[in-house]
Image: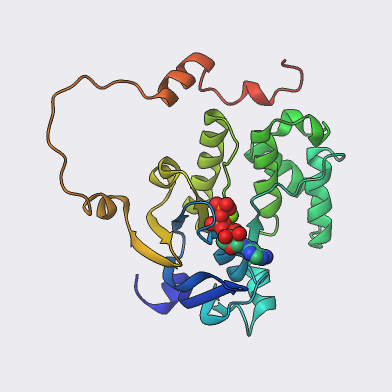
Length: 263
Ligand SMILES: Nc1ncnc2c1ncn2[C@@H]1O[C@H](COP(=O)(O)OP(=O)(O)OP(=O)(O)O)[C@@H](O)[C@H]1O
Ligand SMILES: [Mg+2]
């Protein structure tokens, strides 16, 4: 677990300022291969800045980062070969169909069988029924799933998901979570950023909180929970959460929402 090779991402002493604004003030963390690591933080905490540095889009002022064993500064091309980035805002083409978007990316990556790659991903992301429709007719959840599917073309060992479920309804969020869990189960390393505590709770095997330029806590969910004093035990009926109620009323079966003709 602690050998260098077991770590897919290693970050040491990252610093980054924008003008006089010191956003990262010495960020350190590691992510194990095949792990799901959630970087939590409020708006403006610097989550996207960390992701941009790790995906070579931005240079840090100080510190080092290695992704899949490669240094982000000295071996940027190798890092880019090893990763995919699904940004905070979806990068799908609205005018093309879902399948056309996937085929386009597969061609850009010089894969020999773009149609086959596209069809496999459409199936895996429950988008087969909507494959031929223009993306402009997709729901937010469908777009987000297509966006993640596009980023998986070429099987990168490390994926970055910047706020993968912001703006999605509870059902679409659960669909995205399912996809992320499957990726990690297949050995892909996932670093995701989120503002949602429940998302980190559901998905991540390690959670780090970025606050005022540093990682203030980093651990498993149970380690984080142990940081708080034990709650007093009270005997109360468990009330359903708002999410339970929402899902019970609208139905938790995600398949119908993808059908081409349903209103
Ligand atoms: N290119 C830039 N120029 C100047 N300031 C920037 C730039 N990019 C980010 N910032 C500032 O740096 C801080 C961190 O931004 P960043 O986007 O990394 O935060 P974040 O944690 O991803 O926030 P959010 O949750 O809103 O996505 C913010 O105060 C932001 O305004
Ligand atoms: Mg951000």
